[in-house]
Image 1 (cartoon, rainbow, N blue to C red):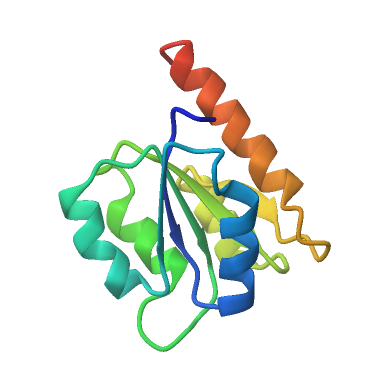
Image 2: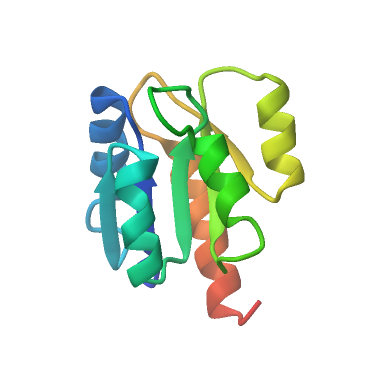
Length: 126
């Protein structure tokens, strides 16, 4: 996983802290934003291997909006963090997103496992 450049887009401060704690020191680059609006300039000036976002509906754009904007135009894996399942989750998966549940214990093992798989594929040249 040390070869991955990751952008986290998470509006909930507590969840953002959990993701940072789970990934800090495990990836080569970890950029964190609290909104899609904050993430967009970073996406235009930096290449990420993975974008991690939730699909929530904060004021402004949601993670699902971000996925729709970048789908097909940015060569990065997109991981959606979920509290629950809904129609947007299925649409996100159809656009190529990887579904990972938010874990209440704070370990974020599902997220770490998904990133390990992406890192292995990157190393294998896939």
